[in-house]
Length: 266
Image (cartoon, rainbow, N blue to C red; front, side, top):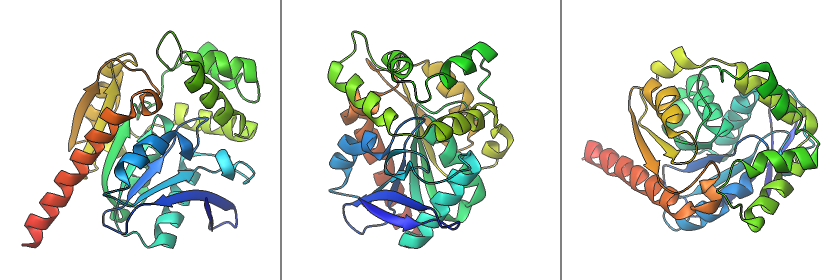
């Protein structure tokens, strides 16, 4: 684990693995997650790419950092990390809420983004949840039984005890304020118009048992240069349950980017 100082003085954590090649891959976890959800995927890709996985402000080893815990603040923190590490243009890879943060970052700092990979992203527009639905998710903040009940719905049935326990442990590390404020931010924020103006190549990955049509229509369809792929026999946390096909899709996508860049240089 390594640390860097955000522009407001907050101390935030990240992991840096693999080589020094370009473009680097910047991994952004989702709501109530941390950088460890990417471990199996990073293990596959680090042989070929430099992989940086962050603990967002308020989550994981960054859980003690003060707020605000909004998409805008998370985007600003990513900018600070990319500039601190002198990554140049990175491929930003986000899961769930992290997908929307990746798009926010591309809007805010397009010159630092080579491409986007959105893995089971939340809608880029408003989530469209009912008040009851938002209240259900909000009630998981700092409430271990409620969080476990919710997380059970994000993995395949019957749930793997190992995966579920791991997700619950990760969720328990998040600050309640970060859980609540980041929920409000990704549920309410509308990035639809901004997303339509992004020209970077994008890969959007949906999972068979995680409303892939919503991912296709509410994320991939809004990005002008996006390709949608669906992985079978998995749910929202396929990054833990079925990391290999996810890693293979990312690897192929980034390798094509490298090939295109080399042809342009020639």
